[in-house]
Length: 84
Image 1 (cartoon, rainbow, N blue to C red):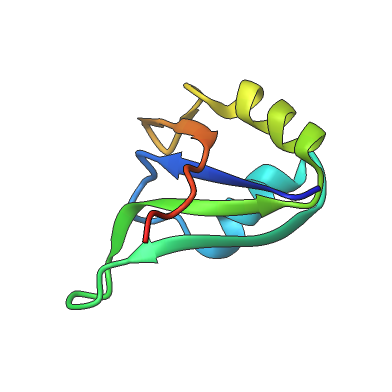
Image 2 (cartoon, rainbow, N blue to C red; image 1 turned 90 degrees about the horizontal axis):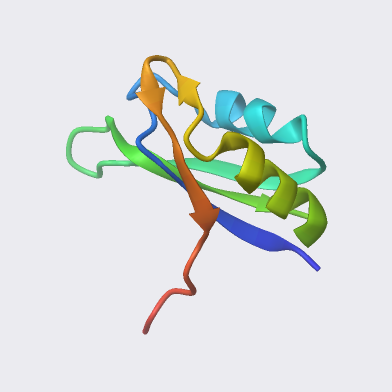
């Protein structure tokens, strides 16, 4: 079963491929997306990663939450389902 992960406090320089590479160390990544501001085109400092295995996702969360990347301490946890 796949798992959706929220990644906060990203450096504004982080790209989708860098985000994917960070999580690929822990398992198969289905998608990785840094959220961009519609008006400015700049990163909003957070993103989402979908991993194909919930075990791999849990490992990635425990390893990466609080880790410093590009001088910023990541906040990594399971994404909350979107409310409609």
